[in-house]
Image 1 (cartoon, one colour):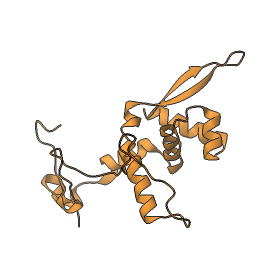
Image 2 (cartoon, helix red, strand yellow; image 1 turned 30 degrees about the horizontal axis):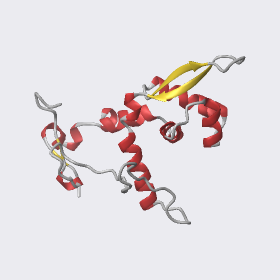
Image 3 (cartoon, helix red, strand yellow; image 1 turned 180 degrees about the vertical axis):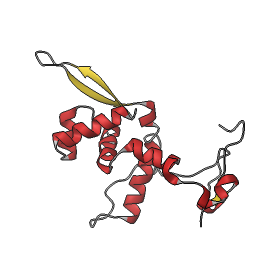
Amino acid sequence: MTIALEGHFADRDAWSMQNCPVARTLAALGPPSAVLVLSEAFFGTNRFGDFVRNLAMTESAVTARLHHLVKAGLLTREPYQEPGQRTRYEYHLTKMGLDLAPTLVSLMEWGETYLPHEEGRQVMLTHARCGERVTAQVRCADGHDVGVDEIIMRPPEPGDE
């Protein structure tokens, strides 16, 4: 099961993965620990000390990851001030960051399936309105489930969005 290649992609030796969307996405996400920081933002964490505590990472590591994610456009850095305290910053997901939700759901689902904890499933994602399990799916714009062997990678044509 593989993705079919068409157009200039058909000659696999003629193009490089260096500037492909996967490489650009991984560069934007940064090291694996930055993905954990991003996940923590999805759980509602937005203050520096909470990131450090919840992730059990050093302050310098969290600082570097937050800086990277802000620079990549996945988080914003917004000032706040508690009465009598110095100005500090909160971090919030941008639209670009929020759009990674399906990717994070996929990573969580994949990890629970293929890298299970010794005590069994640790996470179950459910729909708040109906209570059913949330899963990540690959579908075409018409809503059909698509297997990897049904995907074609081709150059965009005029009018493709």
